[in-house]
Length: 596
Image (tube, rainbow, N blue to C red):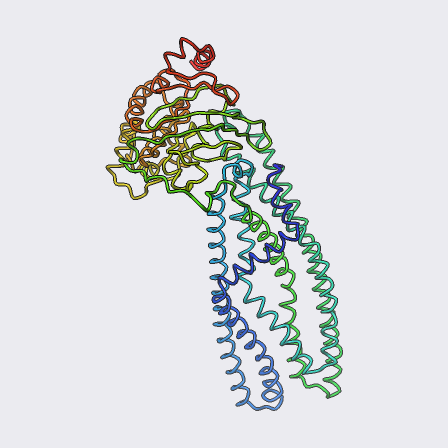
């Protein structure tokens, strides 16, 4: 199992994490206190109605049936029917408010969780499987939702237990003692049940998260799995994790299965004692038939809440575990965040702003990923406004890392990166990234139409602006040939389009924001040779007036750069125009030969 899956669950066992889960549940309840209060009031009113009915039943038996008073019996029956109708309405209101509160809590927590996860830096997403995050926002939130549905029922059951117990004592204290004696045993059994339930519920949630991560990974890599004929291997991996989840679920249900029959037996034992002693009292004349029926009615009212107590307890325990896991995720702080004393925002992405590009400078920059060797070492680089710089080098030489530091996907270990003379750490993140357009080798598209994807960052863009960006990226011609044109669906992750088509859509998406800095990370690698010239012409047009960083290895693309930098082990070993490096740099020639 991926260790990253277990980390939040391990932290959930710490006392501080547990209290965080309680605070999260209480804060969610406070936010919906009005709806919860209405639900509780409806539930308590329903309980009071239910507790009134046995009194009428006793009167109907003793005053109506045994005394032969038909008029009194009709009135009492009418009263019972009226209370039954009122109880049904109150039960509906109790359920309505419970579901409304639960749905609102789930929606609010999901929105809060999603916004928080979006704020977390790429290092977090690199080490955390997407399936685990899906599990947190789906399975765990569903576990939290259920107890909120049952808050009115739980309160009304508590009132029912208290009220029925007091009324039992009022009818006959001796019978009440006999009837309630098993309740003390049930209490101790429930404590033992709860002690086993918590850890087993936590292990089940861990297994569900791991299974979700496994499924997400398998579905995301379906092409590779089919291409390599690994369906049986992948099926075995998923089945193995599914068996772990099944075993954890079985352990949890074993606990519940042992508790519920024991509780049923104790309740039945109390009822047998009541019938035995109560029958003798009726025979002796010290208790009326109506009173015995009333007593048994209240006793039956106790059985329902006690029977579902185990289920309710299990729901609250699982909700508590899930809330602790979600709180541990919400407690994570983003390592990439702008300082409180932020500098002036980066100018907006307008034609005037992008006219001169931006000056980018790396000043003795050092950087290394956590747990890995330093990738960039004391690197100095100045990119002038409007200049196009290409980065070439072997895999792992630091090309993509260097480009990503401009948009502050990571923070440097030492030194600084400046944008127009201002340290990128002193700039508002949103403004900085809005000024840096990035197109990656793996061009990810979102489900929806082509137009939606191009206008993803500028939802209110007009059709003319969208088409202009598509033309600039060399995408317009193939778009209009598709059925539906710009309204054509790209499918999940854009899989209805070819790799080259996806990259041109991604390029159009970046161009529509009119960025001051354009970063193209192998953005033409998946483009077929027949379209490469067309796209290079488009790139030459859109790069004019922008600071552009190209990560590429094709000679034709590198000719677009004013300057080419050759990287080895995070250091610049050669710099100059393409033609100059061809003549003077053996390392450059070797790299080009390897990618020809």
